[in-house]
Length: 152
Image (cartoon, rainbow, N blue to C red):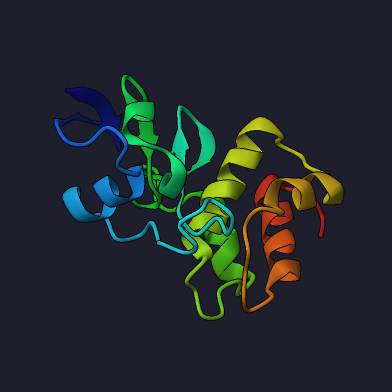
């Protein structure tokens, strides 16, 4: 029996402990914002937070979430509205096709939680594992800097 929190709600899982967290999030919890991309933790489309740190849910087994706090894209907005990263994403017209964006946003939120005023190189290093097939990397960087209150 695996117990953990998902977006603040207690969860119990009594299935295969090697099942990827991604399938719990999407298929059992019914949260479709976290996307399947490569299935190997290389593209970042499935990024969620485990205890505030960005992790790839496609390569995180359920056994790795026991006693942990998992947050998905559905829960990063606060009681007063969108998260500053989400606002910056909209204002900078970051999404093109949009498929990678939940993972990009989750990675950016984790970056800013640990590095509130990141440099360009810190942004590039933190975001390097999140692939955008549409190539909106300049807009992603500008949105992160805006959310951090740093001039682009």
